[in-house]
Image (cartoon, rainbow over all chains, first blue to last red; front, side, top):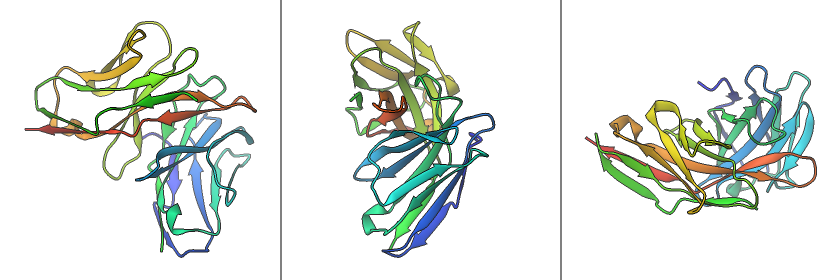
Length: 115
Length: 117
């Protein structure tokens, strides 16, 4: 157990809908990262937050947004869902994240199925 | 961008034999390299990382990796494989993103390791 928690574990929804994925980082970690894992794209970085502020952005669609709250938990919002958004979404956390040397610890993931 | 490549989709090894999962990297500057393992329906578990220093890095569950600058490789190794080592293994490299001093991990496509009894 990495100490990173994600809810829900599974999510099934329809095209056009909006969902929210939640992540709680390990105790003491200030950085949160979101990744998407799909069969065709592999593991892709979406976005990083550090202590409430956005720090880095990857190939995140405009329909997707995220935030990190004062208690350091993070939410990833996916809207206008398409079939291609079906994937496993991982959250990771690390102590700081400023230099890239600290380890990212991953949560168990949320499996999103868009029908 | 920094990248890694895992040339093998699958590696098969008999239990008790040594195993190697290959990874090569392409970076500008110093590479920060990581290995993760993913068991079915589980998240990624950290195994080890190379930041600087000794070229042989020891990690969790008896795994180790050898950093080779001349061959731009970071192969994962274990002297004696267990059936329970069967999983998906990912090599990753730190990617520095411009803008707000953040960074990401760029992952290889993964290598499926199958250890047979």
